[in-house]
Length: 116
Image 1 (cartoon, rainbow, N blue to C red):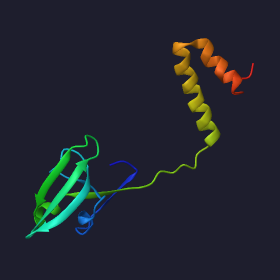
Image 2: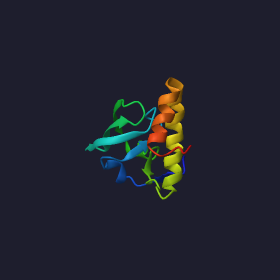
Image 3: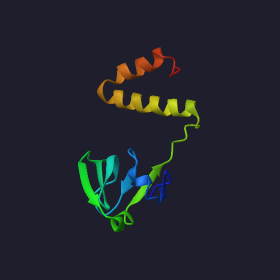
Image 4: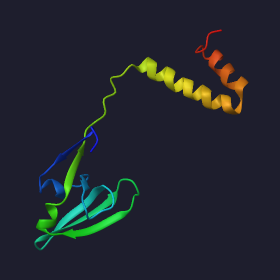
């Protein structure tokens, strides 16, 4: 589990669309599209987060104990924006330099990023 994830255990939370689930019934994490009660069981339809594969599964109440709901926590963008910009610009120049060295450096000089 990454630092950006927080598992929760609530059987009603599994029924909500847009929930992220993981468990032994799927080969990857899924995002719930819809769910409905079928007798004493619950039918869950979802799409895999990595492969985009569609999953449709009927789970019993005992199966629900085997799945976990994962809440993704938002990202923090409070870093140093100027350092990030310079890092990305250096990557751009490096990649452009592989194809045309003069053009890459000339664009950086014209933009005022590289001082001679």
